[in-house]
Image 1 (cartoon, rainbow, N blue to C red):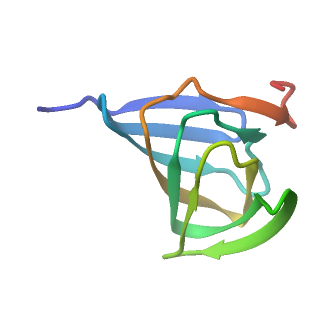
Image 2: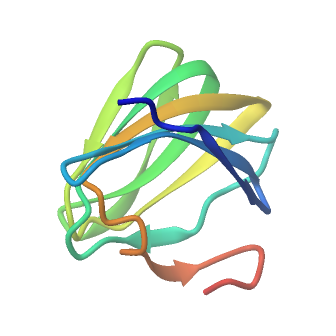
Length: 117
């Protein structure tokens, strides 16, 4: 089955939705230098990120506290629901792959630089 790639513009860059099936979603996220995604969590969505280009600061909840993790090219991180998390691109921006369960609308924004929370 052929899936048409869909580009979704975001205030921090864009997403390319590469696959969306009843079982999973595959995306490429392009985050512009210094831009950040929302501090968010998901009630059902389970996701793994893989840094393909650049680096990110991943702020992620561990033991009830937000901690910062630096991820470089070739590194990945798994985020289970309902873990709070946010990604901030490094000075060169970044491209990362996200593979997740298919609940694209399952986003609870807690903080957002772009007024979406």
